[in-house]
Length: 152
Ligand code: ZN
Image 1 (spheres, rainbow, N blue to C red):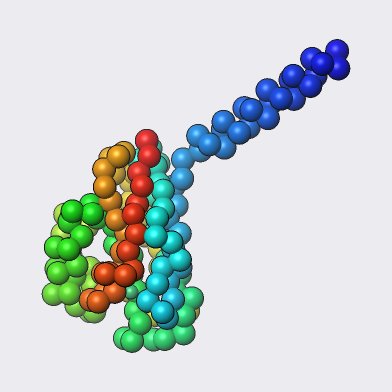
Image 2 (image 1 turned 135 degrees about the vertical axis):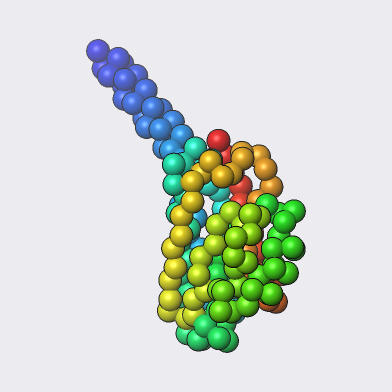
């Protein structure tokens, strides 16, 4: 009897662990700072998420004109062209090229103490494809970038 209940407890724990692992990650949370850095250089989201939420917080103090940041998601192969288009779009457009199909998601541009959120359907991402998140402000994306791993 004692043995059986221990087995049951073990099974319950295994199930809980499996559920925790299977739960899709539907949020990309990034902090940016006055040192032109994100707090992560890799993050994982799931293509099965009905909605993926991007949450950017600027933990610094510098104003948007000096150290503004945004988050843009694209295929890694498109990153260079998207940042060129972003530079042309300029600060008034939050350094996001409007209507650019290569942009999967983008937040607005924020300064120190600010935050921004955007969301998009997980179906826009393909598991195993090579994606990146980056700050599209000119000069920032060479350091402010990371790999976005997409699971099923
Ligand atoms: Zn930036």
